[in-house]
Length: 474
Picture (tube, rainbow, N blue to C red):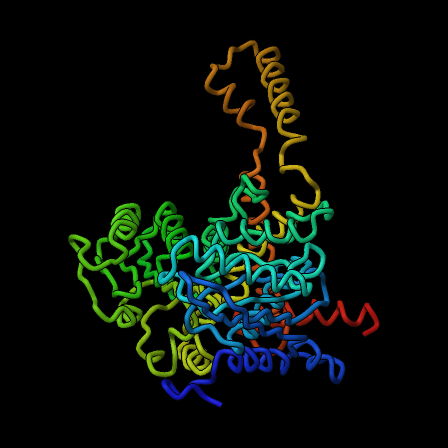
């Protein structure tokens, strides 16, 4: 079945075909690939909420793709066009994503048909709490079985409400905070979760540019500095990605949003853009840029790196031939259809795939989950020990070398040497993204056929999941 608008396979079918492409490069026992591919369950729910004296009925889903590891993990999406197939596809991507970065979770996803912009904060809270209640009492929210997180249309605020609903329902569960991730830090969240996907993409590109032979495939060279970058989507992921790549010397030449795109070949100031965007809720009118009314056309501009960070189905068979970027980094889930992926591969476009690239979110969610289960923030035990160790080294150097080290250097080496939670989160995320990239490269080159990044990433995920099933005797 195809999407009638573009003639492409639909989201769930695209994910399935990408999975099948990887399976053809493997030798799994009969039936095992079907087990890994199949979605375990999808729960559909309709529930009423009284809004300003009238009753509205809302429809939502929670899909659990895999429980080969527990808990199953995945965000909850609020969008007017969310549907069951989309939720299933996203749950499958979560399964593979967790496996690639060695996060011991199964894959899940939730969705609610709603346009959050049409409701007040009080109404959103009421709807969220009712949705959470319906899910939690049926076991779809639990620190040991199914752990939600933010996604499109949701954030820390909604996760705090969901966590509170779970706590009220299961007040004797000492691990109740671990039932949800992406919470505010004051409510059991973790420093670095909000920036996690964008920070992870920064680490992905840093690692990519550490491999000159891989960079050469895209026709690029050097590092991220001065590379011309286009970012589609200026929400949490797009903003943080643009901000961090700008800090690394990248030149953000275009930002694409729903109302259109802004373009300046000399580069945009991300902080100026975000200030304008937050104030006006649109990009149109931002000074000293070219405004492109149909933002999708900006995907086709000349650039070094294209980062789709919005929603699925942005690059299709309809526009893939016109994409000029030699390197595409999928910050969103499913921004390239299967049909477009085939076209781009034939063109020689290098694509760093979603199931690896945006895994920073679930990686830091994993850290938050561990923090909630351990009931202690990262760094609390060792920070002052590290500081004391630094002081002893400074004293030893002064004694042995007969010198006096100035106070600024002492403070930098002692007080600052003890890692705080954010330092440890970023360190763990950096290590995770590096390790996964190296594993993907190893798979790309180990067989007779040179694989593309996406196929190699799927192979990595499937091998790990298959090993889990085989070792369990299933």
